[in-house]
Image (cartoon, rainbow, N blue to C red; front, side, top):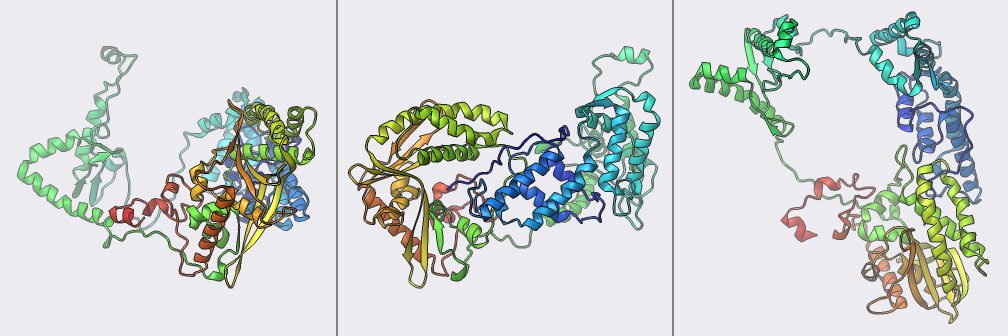
Length: 627
C-alpha cells in the first residue's frame, strides 16, 4: 500500500517570496515566546501545531504567506474528499487525516493574522538599508503586539536595546541609504548591532561568579578557581602577523606578540593572591591530551616535589567529588523492552505489508497499532525515494486500469501522458522532477515493450485489487488485508501476482523463508477466495516483482523461482506461519519485542528510539547466545 506525501501542485502565490524563510525558520518564528499577533502569550499554540502538521511538515510549500494559505486550502479539500469516500491524494493512514475542520479553521485564522504582519517585508528584493530596517521594525512590532497593541519585543532590557538600535539606524538614515539585497539584510543588520552588550540583571544572593582575567583582577573573593590552565589558552598562543615583521611592528609602535604572554602572566600572579586558590586544567581537550600551562609547570618546579604532591593531594578531594557525580551507586543494565498489552488491545487485523514488520520487529506493531503512534514527516522534507515510488505506482496503476482490456496503439506515449498528470505534483520541486522525469520516460518505454509481451498470454488483468481473508484464532478472528498492485489470469486459468518495486527487490531466499512474505500472503488470500471475482482454490502460476528504477536497464521482471515447491505450496506455508504467529500473540504473556531477527538490526527503524535500541543493543556474550 502506498500513500501520497507530495501535495498537489499549487498556483503561484499572490505575494512574492520572503527570501530566505524556510519552514524551519518560520516555525522558529511562530514558536518564539514573544509572538503575540494581537493575543496573549501562547494563545496560538494549538493553531501553530495544526499548521505545522498539515502544511509545514513534508515537502516545502510554495513561498509566502499566500502560498501557505493556499497549501492549507488544498489540504483541507483533499481531507474533505477522503471523508466523503472520493479519490484523494491523502491516504487514510496519514497522520494528518485526524485533523478536524475546527482545527484547520483555527490554522487558517492564524495565517490571516500572520499575513498582514509579514506583508511589509514580503516582496522586498532591493531597497535602502534604512528603509528595510524600518520595515523590519514594523514587522517585529506587529508580530509581538498583544491585545493592547504593546509590542512585547520592545520590553525589558534586551527589547529596549533592540528598539534603540532601530532608532539609531533611522536617525542616521542619510548615512544608511545604500541599496541592500533582501537576502543580505540579515547579515548586515546583525553586523550593525553586534557591538551592543545587554547584561543580565544582577541577582541577589549569588555566591558563584564567573569572571574573565581582567574582571577577576578588579574583584576580591574568598576562593578563586583558575580554570583552563593549558598551553594555548592561558597563556594564549602567539599569532604570527603575516603582514608586519617584528622590526616593522616595533617601528610603528605596535606591541610585540609576546606582550600577551606577559599580560596573562600578570593576571595569573594577581589571581594567586586570593585567600584560597584552586588551579584546574583538563587532562584532555576535545579528546586530545592537553599540556599544562607553563605557569603551572613553573609553579610546580618552584614549590618542590614534596610540597607539590601535598597540593595535588588536597585537589584530589575535589576530583573525587566530581567523579562521584558520574559514578552511580548501582550500575543497572538497560533491558530490552517487553511490552505485554492485554488481548483486547492487540490488533485483530493487519495488512500484508505490516506482517513483514510483525515477523522482523514486533515492537513496530505495538507502537503503530496498539499505542497508535504515527510517524510525522520531517519539517521541510525534500522529495525522496518514497515519493518517487508513489508517483510511479500511481501512474502505472492508472495505465493498467485504463487499458485493462486492450493496449493503446502507442502504449509508451499513453503511459507518459498519464505520468505527466501524476508528475504535476512535483511542479513545486523542479530539482526532483528534472531528475525523476527522464527516468520515468525510460521506464515507460521499457514497460510498454514488456507489457506487450505479457498481454499475449493473459485472459484478464486487474490492478489495485483489494482483498482480505479471516483467520480463526479461537475467541477472536484475525483479518489479513492486501491491495495487490496487479493480478493476472493467464490463458490456462491460473493466476500471476505482480508487485511493482522502485527500490530493492527481495531475494528468493527472503521470500522462501518468510521474512518478505508480501507476495506469498497475497497468493494465500487469492487461493482462499479473498479477492473479488476470483474463485477459491485458484492456482498460482507465478509471483513476480517488477523492478522499476529507470537506469540501465530501466526495468526488469523478476519472477520468484522457488528452489523447492511451487507458489501454491509457499502461499499455504506463509499462511500457516502467519496463523502460528497470530495465535502466539493471542497469549497475553507474549511480548512485542524489538528486532527479533538479526538481519533486521542493521537498519534504524521508525520506532527504534522509542524502544531504546541504542541503549540495550550493545550485546555481550550472554546476549549473543540468547539471540
